Length: 245
Ligand SMILES: Cc1cc2nc3c(=O)[nH]c(=O)nc-3n(C[C@H](O)[C@H](O)[C@H](O)COP(=O)(O)O)c2cc1C
Image: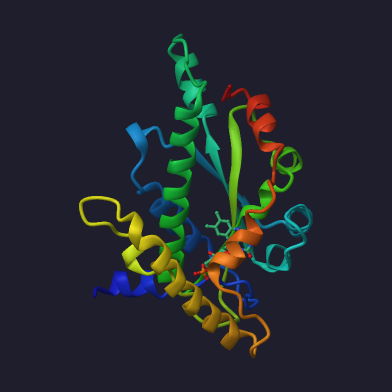
């Protein structure tokens, strides 16, 4: 193992922070790190909105399902897929732009995720902790208004950052037998692998909750996937100018 892989494999989401602020030089270094992530065709189709203002964090926290770590973190970053800069580049060159369709949206979302995760790893290397906030997509319209996001800019995920005041256990991941496939996809591995993972997760939750929660992963996924959510996203994306149908 290298120092970097040890750091990466030591990741856990942090939802409680000390009062120590994050200094600006560290934040700048993290933004430069995020920017060093690979980018499809070098389009760099993302923007990061930095939110430190208490009132704004309060509002976003409420919109994100009243998650208190959003309110309490010293810095909240909102990662957005940003096709506005691509559109502007075309306009600056008096060229037509074909930003419609799923492809450019995928490019934007993938670029955004790569930048976000690169930043989080950098943050953890400074001893910071963080957690992604998909909850910002609970009400994309209001989040978009609050952050004054122009057309072609879609909020993808928030990220709370701060110095940890918590040391949660590491959450086990799926067995590698159902994640990494040698040369071809091993469909037969999936059910046995998931059964093993159910046992692992059940024990993990049981230990974390003094036996109160003992669900396996498949049960939790079945619960989570039983209903559709955030059905307004499609319309929001179309209203932002990206014709995905
Ligand atoms: C895109 C994305 C959105 C997430 N949204 C939330 C969220 O809204 N609230 C939260 O507490 N955790 C959120 N998480 C954190 C996950 O729950 C967490 O990463 C996962 O359970 C694995 O735990 P770990 O990060 O501690 O290893 C999100 C993670 C990702 C990648």
